[in-house]
Length: 307
Image (cartoon, rainbow, N blue to C red; front, side, top):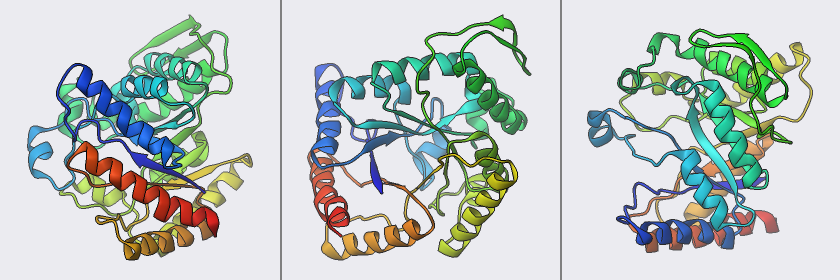
């Protein structure tokens, strides 16, 4: 089992200039020091202001690929997990270029978590048709995989035409692509086009799309995993496949009881084949975040690895 934690670069606002870089560096180095395998951050380039300030799930974040370029330079081995990049927001050639550049310059540390997105106001701000998001996500995955295979790409997309275009650098190996979402459609997309699946359990939010896509409990998760394996078998996909998920319980206080409860859910997920655990830690300051990370490394990661 490997473990990843969030880096709340936008939530802990360090100001501007050198101080911001120093605080980001302190966050990610605390993760490496604590024995974490990866850091993660989300994507919201233009979220609804109402959602951002009023929804229980509202949150801001830095641009993930730009932030991870800095993180890669500050660390030696910490993996970089986008959780998640919204595929329809970008032309697939631009995303493939940015991701492959980061993969190569970081020493093959990128794990590209992707999804279709859910916030209609954000799609409208970016000029992307919300109704097309599923089709655009599938098209992007197919196109990115063609690009990373090397050579010229001949493909007519919904909003692009590549009559014979070659994009470099070609990453070797390419970043694994983990498909997010817990809906049946997301499950099929992960089975067909992904190297892993990144669902999420029910989270506090007013967004109906997010609630419908969530995994509700452990039995529901087990059913989804069984269906995923069935789909992959029917498609003849037998290679390695990652299962990455945040346990339903998220520690809010640094206590032994909370660590034990979290580890209990880790054990349940491991029984379903999960090989990556991620979660988000609460923190109102850099100092509190680094303290929480050290606690998590000792009481969760350290204890798990001694079992």
